[in-house]
Image 1: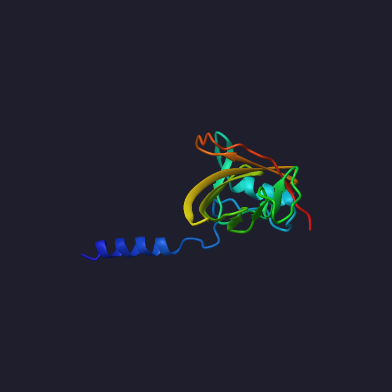
Image 2: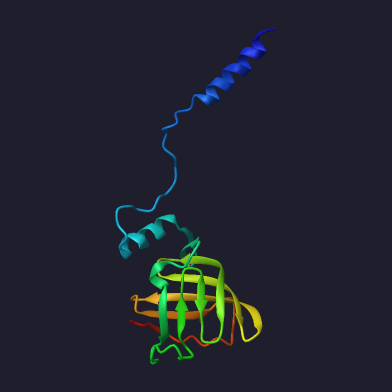
Length: 159
């Protein structure tokens, strides 16, 4: 009569006695530095491979994409109509603003962002890929067959 009770008790004790310091299979970004190579290595180690390369969900725009950008032949003046200000979770364009609603990394130097846009009394959703070329050029491109988009390379504006 006590055998079923003892068997259940033994199973419960076995479940509770697992080694708390046992290793866990997970990937962790390298620590000890914040240089770009370390950050890119961390992104690659956390990425899920896809046909286009590593991709993973992000919570904000990576630091190396942030800043003020303008068309490669632009003046970087705030009045420039191709100027883009990229922040942690927002994009500022000439006459519109976009709040990041979704962002994912595609490899070490490309992100795809979905933006809830607003400007001139209208609202819409915009999805764009931004690819860094040597940290000084940013190439926006269309996503999901947007035919009317003409990519224009952007340069980083200096203060």
